[in-house]
Length: 280
Image (cartoon, rainbow, N blue to C red; front, top):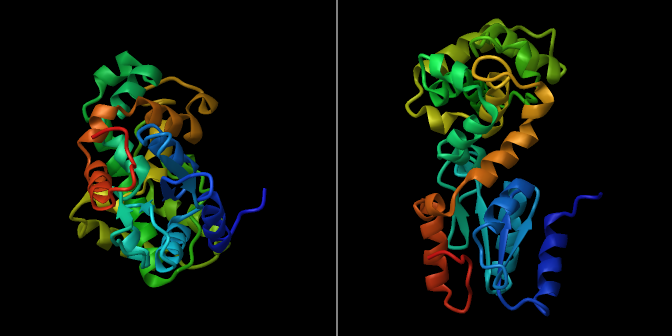
């Protein structure tokens, strides 16, 4: 299926105004759309996936500048790092991304009950979240360095078992760099300077949850559920399966306590012709 560009999506929203007089909430991707559809007022708010944070920002900006009312967007909490800044109609998630928000919630506990081994979980000396975050910090630092230094590295499609030990979830930094460079078609380039930069960045991390990426955390969770605190086959704990399970396990009561929930309610109070949430 062809991906529509932001201007096409903006024009589509204009056309849909004839059938829908309520709110249009634009989010990054399908997972975000399915998440918010659990909590929006189904008759008063339509949720649209734009295909990324930059497209969300462009769609909202285009429609707001043309005087279109009832449009708002939600993007990842770390969007300012790539130049996407919040506004009255462009709101930020509480955390760097949706997956990080889900992992920090009780949804993870429910997923562990469903997919984990009670015996193996009882033997762990560390909390599962601590294990996940410690394994993800070097990857998050590497992602940040790639962005800040313009390294143009590709992290999508990296093979996590190549650099994370399934038995312990310990991460091999040299293997991480090699795998990312392989995926980026830079396998023959020098690894030493990058390794030193990653370790230096790790030493300066103030908030581990802010530096990490949800894609990494969920992928590492899948590895843990295969060996360290579970006995599942890879296909049973795939990335898509775990994200769906986390999303379904996330409760309305927990959503009510988030900053994004309150921000959406505040937006509706400022734009009283429009409703977003069915909670309040």
